[in-house]
Length: 153
Image (cartoon, rainbow, N blue to C red):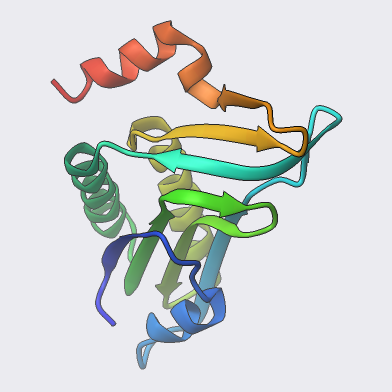
């Protein structure tokens, strides 16, 4: 598998993605997976709804992938973002990096995660066991949301 971005509703298999990024000179594979929390601030979470603006989200994911490949001496990188309704405990997003050595793999994965969180537009709504819904992360703060959107214009 080449370096790529994936936007999809179905859950992904982190182990399969790890195997897919290995090349002959790979000495390390670093994988990160963000999962739907089953509890947040003492409240039981049942589901997470992830919404995107597909064109913007896809473009920013590609930019983050390309910048990570350029900045670090890595072999391959795969970024996965799930969309739609996700159950508690399921994967939300993943970053898988292969590199000749562990330092490069770790540094690239951490940098990619920081860029992903800062630049990739996502809106997340938690649905609790008692049926209550609320938006989480930057979408709660209109000022932060505005500042993120200004970067895309």
